[in-house]
Amino acid sequence: MGHTFKMTGGDKLTKALELLAVKAKNSAVLNVGFPHGATEPDGQATALVAFINEFGRMVHSKDGDYYQMPRPFFRQMIDKHKDHWGEDLGKLLKSHDYDAVVALKLLGEGMVGELVLSIQELTSPPLAPSTIKKKGFSKPLIDSSKMWKSATLWVEESELK
Image (cartoon, rainbow, N blue to C red):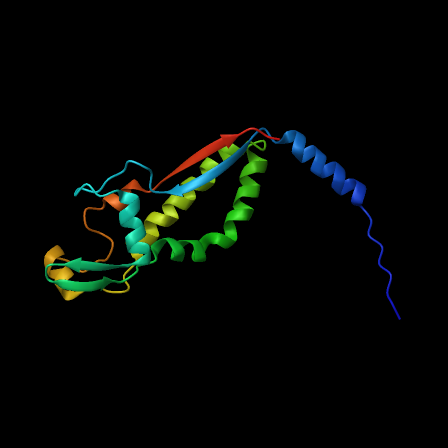
């Protein structure tokens, strides 16, 4: 025996979505990360250093080959915080008259803070004894502090279609 379901309110939903589309002032994309042009004290691109730290790499040196362990600070930040970003954005859009650029910049500021905190809090995997000796301390991801100080956001605005 089959069941019959009746859904009501479709017209109200359609009107609400149409009103939201009218209210939307703009469309934009939020980027959080390390900007093009930022460099480390040794001249390497900060985005490359962040990528290498995030995913690890094989290093070939005069002292021998070794594997630099991944320290997934970015992925850990995403896993820890992703569940609240959508709701946060919805609230920001509503409280800022559906201005996507303003809402995304505000959301991005929080995300940058979460990224910096993830870099600062990461302790595993531990550094190799040779790296600790060279650096003089055992905290991973922190050498000159340039990487976490370079974390930023940028919003790319586009026209609504």
